[in-house]
Image 1: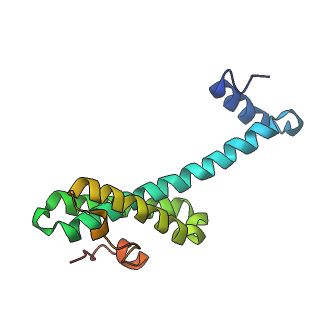
Image 2 (image 1 turned 135 degrees about the vertical axis):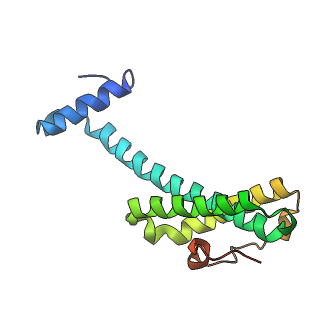
Image 3 (image 1 turned 135 degrees about the horizontal axis):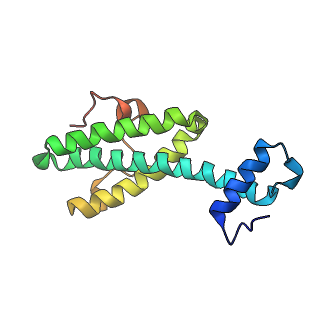
Amino acid sequence: MINYDQDFYGWTQEQAALLRAGRLNDLDIENLIEEVETMGRSEKRELESRLTVLLLHLLKWKYQDVRRGRSWELSIIEQRLKFEETLEENPGLKPKLDEILFKAYKFAIIQASRETQLSIKVFPESCPWTFEQITDNAFYPE
């Protein structure tokens, strides 16, 4: 058996081969469980990250209107697409959207404050937009 801690890649390949062969008793169950849970957390973090960047750009669009430009518009379009794609690939995350939005918005206002040089108090404490607005390609906060 390949050691999980000494050769992770080799371990993953060995575990996949054991699964394909139906040798379930030979699997490293404890580490497999940990890796599957980690994969799920990774997908959740990816969705949260996409939403954070999208919210950041929406905040900058609203609060730094003098700096609006094609680059910001394209960033908003890109992040909407990436957010939607990640959610489509992971529909099990839909019930967690409120929690993800809450966290993503908190990070977005910190980043927006840093990038705009505006006080964090300028931004609403909770997200002022619905998921429908955030993901609507026609929505740009004024």
